[in-house]
Amino acid sequence: MNTIVETRTLAPAVKLFRIDAPKVARKQRAGQFVIVRVAPDGERIPLTIAEADSDAGTITLVVQAVGKTTTLMNALDVGDEILDMAGPLGTPSEVAEFGTVVVVGGGVGTAVSYPTAVALSEAGNSVLAVIGARSRPNLLLEEELSAVCAEVRVCTDDGSHGRHGLVTDELADLLETRSVDRVLAAGPVVMMQAVAETTRPYDIPTVASLNPIMVDGTGMCGGCRVSVGGTNRFACLDGPDFDAHLVDFTLLEQRNRAYLDWEAKQRADLHPCAAADQAVDFEATP
Image (cartoon, rainbow, N blue to C red; front, top):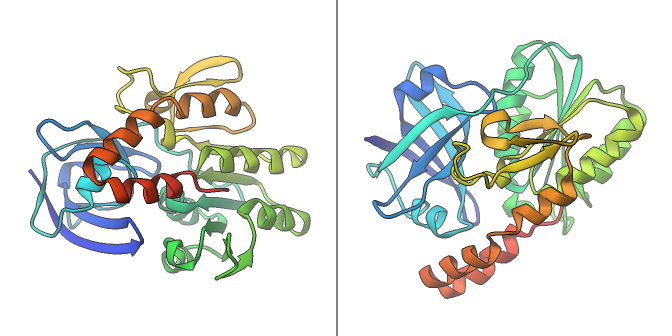
């Protein structure tokens, strides 16, 4: 069993878990994820590994209570055990010495960007981060990113911290003044699409981490099928990282919304009041 050894609330409805998982910790690479199940009759969900400590034998997961399973997981505490955990899964992020790299994280997508930012920094890159959230209390991992990045730029929808605006506004200004060799985006689908369109005129290689569309994480369900350059790929097996300029984001958004009604019903069955709030948070703007 995988015992929880630390928990910490990072933002409203967002919780950090450090879990005893020595086999996963030894093999994990940036960009990979685990599949967890928290109840015997529950679904299996993919969660990005935000950090791994091979010496301590632990991995770190950042979980936003969006649906029924993530809400149940966020009710767990130190000493509780994750019923099932499989991983690491997925194709690791490409890490090389590119030069100047910008990681763009929106909402809980910042936790996806973080391990890749660490790996890119260790590979000798100058890493800049542009992160955003609805408001300051919802902002994630600013301090952690500051420890590994040359610069961290913050945006909030309400202007309560950093720039009053979207991450793409800040990214556009950055590209006007800095030479950038690569961009990585992780967050809501609409945000990643906006990042891709922001970098396209500059012909900057841009990667989108398509974690939001994964369902079972093994390729069996077909729910994470995505069109990349006209070819069908699976985010969980072939990704989650793809060339953002080749992703059909219109089709991706349609597929990503296929389960919204079912997810809303599950949230309502679990906690009617919380369901409405979480549904709004899930539909965060870029």
